[in-house]
Image (cartoon, rainbow over all chains, first blue to last red; front, side, top):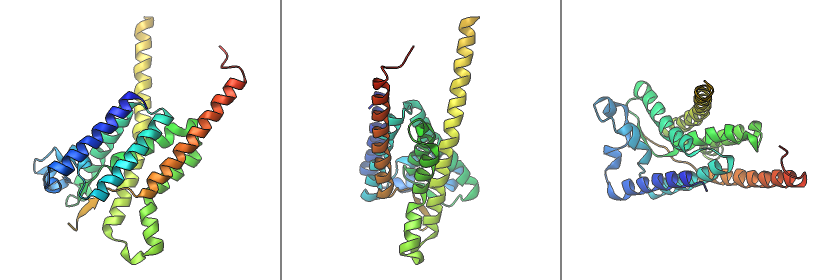
Amino acid sequence: MRKDLLVLTITIIAISLTVFLLIPNALETLAFSGQEFLGGEVWRIITFSFVHISWTHLIENIITLIVTALLSYEFGLRGKHFIYTFVLSGVLIALSQVMLAPLIILAGASLGIYAVLGSISIKGSTLISEYILIPVLGLSVFLKFIFSLITYPEGISMQLINQSFLHFFGFLSGIILFYIFIKYDHVRKTSCLRKITT
Amino acid sequence: MDNVVLLEITTTTSILGLIILIYAKIMKNKMKKFVLRRGGIEG
């Protein structure tokens, strides 16, 4: 694996493990809530991605993060795009929550992971058609919801619906951020070339 | 706890990711073999 992707993945896992093991009240102090954010606790917009409330929650997210990092390597997603997408998507969606649902508390790394998967679905089109990759990865956002709908529809809660939509917006933000980064890189390269030639 | 939205991913998503990873690996190897058979990339 590329060194930068490996370092970034290990760093995210290490921070998540540290927060889970060493900060027992992380949900109260580090998870994102629009109300607390507006009250001055601005760090929550970054820290909520590293807060997990159970071993299942943590392990599931870590396993998917590793798979996502492997996919990023295979499809050639650069390390800086990986981390910018992971952090920025969380920030953007948390900010939208400030206006839409300030009382909802967000915790977990999956927003960032789904955003990276969104970027991969575009970047990976060099190997696998985007007509396969986007629907397959995009559908995975609603897997839990679809599974509940088939097996136990009465068990569908507002939390599950919120979770599915947040994951979907994470995935979508990953696609949009990917195009923004590509455009930015192109503009930067063009200006560098212009400087060299003049 | 009622208003907490846990951003967790199901194991199925990881399995789906792994399947795509294996498929991508196979496609990459196929492309490599194709390029080698044609005597490398010209130019």
